[in-house]
Structure formats: structure tokens, C-alpha cells
Amino acid sequence: MKKLDQFILKSYLGPLVLTFFISLFILVMQFLWKYVDDLVGKGLEWYVIAKLLYYASSTFVPLALPLAILLSSLMTFGNFGENYELVAMKASGISLRRIMMPLIILSIIISFTAFIFSNNILPIANLKFHSLLYDVRQQKLTLNIKEGIFYNGIDGFTIRIKEKDQDKNIIKDVMIYNHADRMGNIKLTTAEWGQMELTPDKSTLIFHLFDGYNYEDIVNQKGYKQNRPFQRSKFKEQTRRFSGLDFSLNRTDEQLFRNNYQMMNLQQISSYRDSLNKELILRKNNLNKSIRNRFVFYEKADTTYFANNTIKATILESDTVYNITKVSRDTKQKAIGFALQSARSAKNNLEFNRIDFEKRAERIRKHDIEWHRKFTLSIACFILFFIGAPLGAIIRKGGLGMPVVVSIVFFVIYHIISITGEKYARAGVLAPEVAMWLASGILLPLGIFLTYKATTDAPLLDAESWGKFFKQFNFKKKKQ
Image (cartoon, rainbow, N blue to C red; front, top):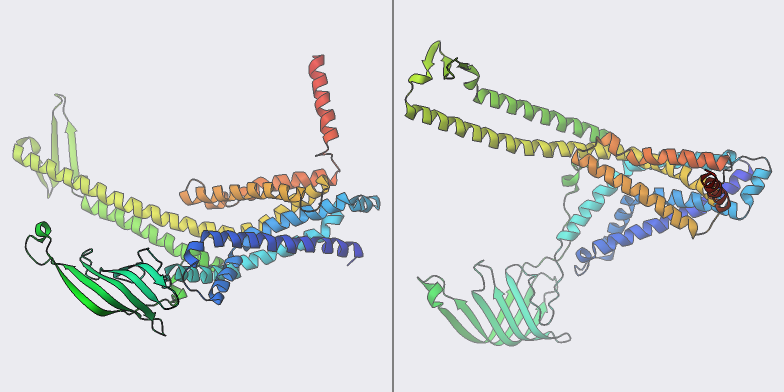
């Protein structure tokens, strides 16, 4: 490898690693802000949160990697142009295509690695992340009874404590509502003060209450809603135990999440998608047969119009002809009622199956979307390099100023187009193979155009050249 290639690769790899981890860090912080309510106050161990962030960061690679490639390529060639290193290379007879060649090869390697990651590692990361996140969100809040606030973290009970001494666990003005019977606030215990303690295994909460009352509405008497009878009993000392507390993290079997399309590789998605499609076709055929068998009687109806504008309908069945004009009015009304009932039943059946078919079709489209997503990540990395590198050579500004602004603009455009296309694909407006490649199809011509302009040294962003162009245009307009 030539020294020039080594120099270019070293200049590129530093910003690539830096921008990749910065992008990943920003996305992880966004994840924390989104799910902070599900993480705080549950007594989670540090390693559980660390595992969750590790799995989450793995799922954010498809967003962070294209942005890092775009920003690092723009920074690298912007630094080359700003420090006149690009001019020195071109003055030595080295073309921009030759300068970009080692980075093109590296981009191909990165794109291939991104495909392997997307197909083999990302499904496992999604499985680990979503299963752990589900368990964390189902986790109960730790025992944290605050002063003056009703606490309902214990199943079947609501507790309010007016004052609490943290050192001695002394509680004052206690109210305990018992909802175990699921009949509302019919049982209430109050106490002037008490002492609260938790067993060493944290499975039982014990209240030692003093100087209080037990109130209970009598609901087993006739007319209790009008009279509202209740009984009250006074106590000097009483102990209440709340057992069965479980604040530990219970893990769900990961196999329950494996049927989700985000947890599959290409082969699994294709196989599962074919099974879903066959099942959808089978259900449609069964519905068609059911409708035909249900209304086979009406297929034999023969209606004939005569010249005097009267209708004579005959029904052919068992080689016997029945003339409807000779049927009584009551029989006709019964026949009409039966026909209307059959039509309504068929309509409801078709409407129910239509909704079911739409959901199944949407599920198939989601598998198609995920199948194409495995490839779009790799292609996006390659295309965004051919946008960032020539754009950096044209702008000739390095650092984290202008390149960051330009990169964010192009990445936002790419991301918006990708999200829009994916939504259209899920809704069935666009075919998945069109919608998922929409962003790449739009940005690819732009990358080719920028690469052509950069290799031909076209003054694309030169203010003086654009000024001359508009002056020339205005001069022609005035001359006319």
C-alpha cells in the first residue's frame, strides 16, 4: 500500500470512528429520554441498565453508521481542500478518482460488513433488547410511599401517610383502603401513628398501627345504597401485613418474541413470509367456497321480463317450476325477509374477513419491508459516501462546523424519505420493493452528479461563478 493511501485512510478512519460513537451516543441519550419513566424508581441493578443500553446501542447502528460515513467523508475531503492538500495531490498528477479509490474500497468493505451485521447480529440484538425492555416496563415500582400521596403499588390496597420519619420508620396519620374485594372503598383503616418495616427478603411489608379505627360498609343488606350502613371498630394496636411483594425483575422467555419480523434473518423472513402468504390465500379460497355454497340456491334463479313490464320469476329446483305470481303475499314477505337476512349476514361475514385479510396483508408487507431493509443499510452507506466525499472536495471546509450542518441536512432528507416510504409500504400505497429503495433511488443520482462535478473541478459552490452567471442572465434579459 502506498504512503498516500495510508495517509488518506488514517485521515478518514479517525473522523469515522469519532462521528460514529458521537451519533450512537446521541441516539442512546434519546432512548433514555424516551423511556426514562419506565426505568426510574424500579430498583433496577446497574448491570440490567447497562445490558439494556448495550442492546439498544446495537439496534441504533443502522442510523448511526450512514450518518458517520457521510459526516466523516465530508470532513476528510473538506480538510484536504482547506489545507490545500487536495490541490497538492492534483498538482502531482493524481486525480480525485485515484484519491478516493482507497476510501471507495473501504466503503465497499464497510457496506458488506453492514449487511452481515444487519442480517446476523441485528436480529439477535433486537430480540435481546425488546425482550429485556418488555420485562423492565412490566417491572413494578419499588416500595416508595411518599408523604401525603396515595400509593397503590401494592395489589388490592391504597395507602396514604401524612408524615414519615425516615430514620425510625415512624408514620403518622395513616389511611389504608382495602380493595381486595373489588367493590370500591368499602373497607378503610385509619391510625394516628404507627411503625413501618420491611422484611429482610423484601417480600412482606409490616405496619404496626396504634390508636385507630376500622371502617367497613355493610353491603349485604337490602337497600344498603339508600341507608349506607357501616360498622366501626376501635383498636389500640393492630398489625397489618402485606405479603407477596415482588420487586425483582422477572425475565420472559425470549422464544416468545422470535416470531417477530425484526428478530429474523433473510432466510427466516422469506420462509415465514411464504407461510403467511399461503395461509392468506387459503383463507380467501375458503371464504369464496363458503359464500358459493351458502348461496348456491340463488344461482339457479331465472328472472324473465315480459313485454307488459311484469316480472315472472321462476326458480328451477328438483325439475319443478314454481310460479312466483301464484305464491301468497305472506310467503313472498317471508322470502324477502330471509333474503335480506342472508344478505346482511353475508355482508357482515365479508366485512369481518376483509379486516382480517387487511391485517394479514399488512403483516406480510412488514416482512417484505424488513427483508429489503437488510440491503438498504449497506447501499445507504455506499451512496452517502459518494455524497460526502465530493461535497467535501467542493466545499473545502473541514472541522465540525460546515460539514456537520451539511451532513445533517442530507441525512435528514434521507431519513425523511426512508420513513415516508416505509409508511407508504405498510399502508399498501407503495410496493415494499419500491418504497424501501426510494431514498437510495433519489440520492444515487445526486451522488453521481456531485462526484462528476468534483472530478471535473466544476465551481459548483463558487459564489463568484454564480454571480457571473446571474449577471450574464440579467444582461441578456435587459438587451431583449
